[in-house]
Length: 84
Image 1 (cartoon, rainbow, N blue to C red):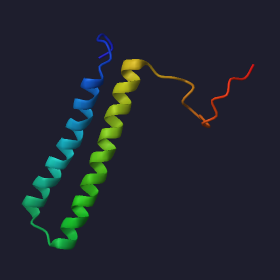
Image 2 (cartoon, rainbow, N blue to C red; image 1 turned 180 degrees about the vertical axis):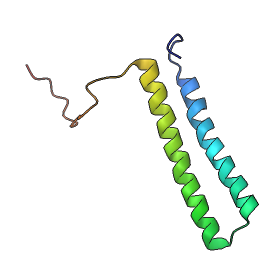
Image 3 (cartoon, helix red, strand yellow; image 1 turned 90 degrees about the horizontal axis):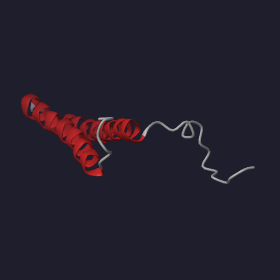
């Protein structure tokens, strides 16, 4: 990916694709297990949390790979005042 120019469209498709894959696996798990309402709700809640996590991991990795890692991000306190 480092040979190509960074694309927000590719980033969006990859992050949403990863979430879609996790949700599809969650749906297949629900269909295969046929759990009761309580367990089903728990499986869906974990699936949604994993989908959000997958989106974050994929987008962070692609952004860092495409734009380069910034050493300023580590320990950033949110204070962006320039100091001499």
